[in-house]
Length: 205
Ligand SMILES: *[C@@H]1O[C@H](CO)[C@@H](O)[C@H](O)[C@H]1NC(C)=O
Ligand SMILES: *[C@@H]1O[C@H](CO)[C@@H](O)[C@H](O)[C@H]1NC(C)=O
Ligand SMILES: *[C@@H]1O[C@H](CO)[C@@H](O)[C@H](O)[C@H]1NC(C)=O
Ligand SMILES: *[C@@H]1O[C@H](CO)[C@@H](O)[C@H](O)[C@H]1NC(C)=O
Image (cartoon, rainbow, N blue to C red):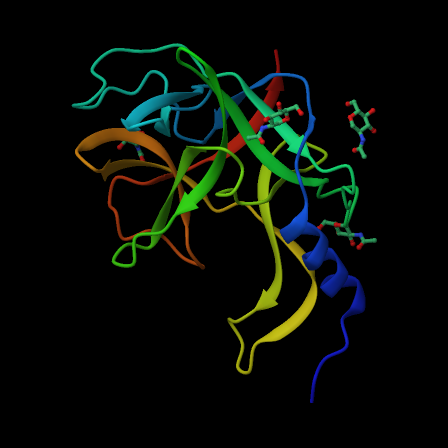
């Protein structure tokens, strides 16, 4: 039997065709963690390929970034048909950044999935075709939402839930090794032993 989910179907159709040109004020992304070494640190844009950046922790040393760097300035782009599924969990949009080269390049945050790891790497890519929709809740905490629960068999569709599966991990991508933001795919702890649970908070500049 086919489930009738007209609202979700509409929301999905809107989000895949949406253009995210309504830009928020600038902000920093701040690490919130019980781990005092990284609590209060910020996220920076760390070069990890041609016009590709990972979100590294500004003050955490690594072989590709031995010394602290300045926090990056981010924006939250929403569409003019922005759907607010729930005021508590926040409006849907994309996290964006402007890469300052000869010409400023608008970029968006997308989860890069390595099939042999259980953490995805959020990377900034030019344009908005590669972008993962995200939300900031009413505490300014970054979350990703979904309505399918596949931890039960058979999987069920239910109300949207906000997930906060952010970690700080030592990661490696195309020759660059940093301590970066990472996203755990599914429940449980990451296999990468360096990962520390964090939340990501928006702080207006
Ligand atoms: C975000 O919105 C601004 C303002 O409309 C736009 O210039 C920029 O290209 C957008 N960023 C992305 C990555 O689409
Ligand atoms: C806290 O974070 C630092 C930096 O990532 C890490 O070296 C350390 O092992 C962490 N401590 C705990 C208790 O997880
Ligand atoms: C677009 O952004 C402006 C300024 O932040 C805001 O007042 C307006 O409500 C936004 N429109 C939508 C559809 O989100
Ligand atoms: C909005 O989201 C919160 C947190 O997930 C939840 O407790 C609440 O029931 C939701 N409200 C509606 C109207 O769905």
